[in-house]
Amino acid sequence: MASLVEKQLFKALFSFFLLVLLFSDTVYSYRKTLDQRKPCKHFSFYFHDILYDGDNVANATSAAIVSPPGLGNFKFGKFVIFDGPITMDKNYLSEPVARAQGFYFYDMKTDFNSWFSFTLVFNSTEHKGTLNIMGADLMMEPTRDLSVVGGTGDFFMARGIATFVTDLFQGARYFRVKMDIKLYECY
Image 1 (tube, helix red, strand yellow):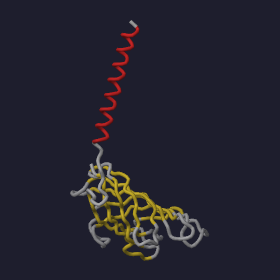
Image 2: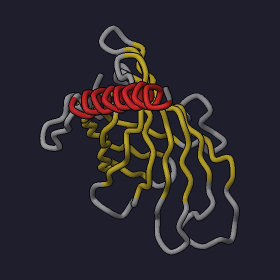
Image 3: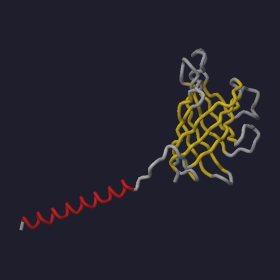
Image 4: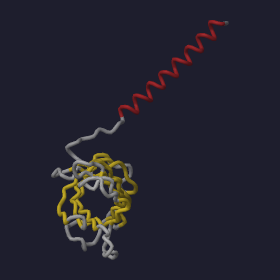
């Protein structure tokens, strides 16, 4: 009697492990492969930032929340919150295709370097949803890559790279960055 129970238990466990093996192989073989040479979506936008200086309330798109004095010549510790237009061309007054909402702070004492975290909020007839971008902006480099870490709506769970190129820099008052966004995971 004990051997009959042992045989049935062995058959049940063996069947269970076969099912687990079958399903894990199915899930593994269905994974999406990424082609780093060919993005599934590609955009080029311009981010405009006008820092509030006390006199430009109507045009300012960002404000320094913390700006500690005496920490060096590279704005170390300065924290800026922004809500700026994203345009298809270099003109600040062009129709925005999205808004960039987030923050950046200067995090290096020996050179200009900042860390960005922001969301591109799309609400147009062409796109609806968000893209979340974050990473280090090594400002002295000609190009910088930041991570696209997710999104919603048309960009649900998107991942990729946002390449920054400083297009125009007018001191602390205004800068324009060209963002070349390549998404490698699109659902």
